[in-house]
Length: 417
Ligand code: ATP
Ligand code: MG
Image 1 (tube, rainbow, N blue to C red):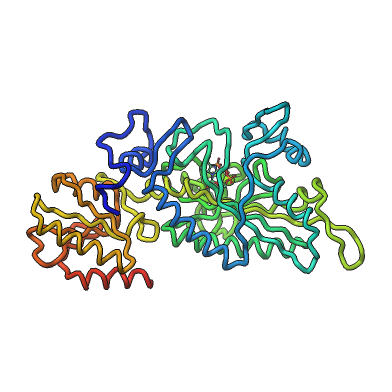
Image 2 (image 1 turned 180 degrees about the vertical axis):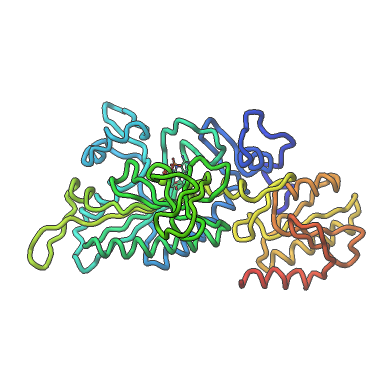
């Protein structure tokens, strides 16, 4: 992408009302734009990061046999009445009336999935069913101040699984727990799996995937020795206590950003909505349901909270909008511009994703923008670099002079890792 043609460019100032780092940096660097509290446009750069996050999630979920689909966001009141959630979730659900009919905007999709399954009369041998989508969720969030971490309209990947037995549900639930750990590791997070309440979804405990950081809104108690971790909603004890699980470690406390949450829902939804199957003895039994959420737009914000310095964002390689940021420091010299153009075309041909700053602006402005945008590798072509290219990793001081072949080779090696 030629930056001269990119929309929009960086901004000098963060919005005055911005409080969080992700809000300030993502807006300044041109990744997101705020329409109103809790409502964001993913601009082309932000959209690319979210697509990379989604690709990682999709690849891992498909490996578990889950299938991608897309469900509607405008729901009739009747379906929510079947589980009584029109009433019990009315604080969070946007509810509206049109032509005397009531509609809800989707804040989750359990009811829609159970409806799909009961309509399709699936034979017992065809279970489990595992379906997911990436789509918008609407939630009437009271606080929407943490930048893109908390939207009133945001992107969620939600997966639903339906099983004949409790054992089968737990088996897949554990598989997804491991899959989520792989997904978050690939994205660049070290997460804690914390036990928590089931919220408006279930009376059973759920598991949250928490990125521990002082800027998080949740409070997590965890053991410094074993895997034990619980959200403060359910933890009974204090920091400094001996761990109730391994009785060796000490309980620590940290704030956390919840990036994923999985729920073993049980049979409540199937019972209320009449999603039954007939077992070998001819007995009608309800299906076992579980649901699994990840918030790609919250992850976009959490990445910036975790990976930035005083100059801007420092993207982990797997989710960076581009592999390389190529700067032509030409001072109006057409020979340098021509050389940079050729390098850009050759790298693109090799399927290396390049943001190419070909603008007619000062070197200082290009360097500052490159630091702000945060692409992991900066390539500079200038009078000083001769027939080589200056290679520098974002966040590191040292640079190297490399040939185009060496540069290409390094990116190719990274692509096959
Ligand atoms: P929170 O406790 O932070 O309000 P939640 O527990 O209500 O979140 P879930 O219903 O578990 O959220 O949603 C699954 C995932 O969707 C969360 O783990 C998070 O990554 C994302 N998510 C939830 N609410 C929001 C929001 N308001 N804005 C952006 N992402 C969200
Ligand atoms: Mg949650």
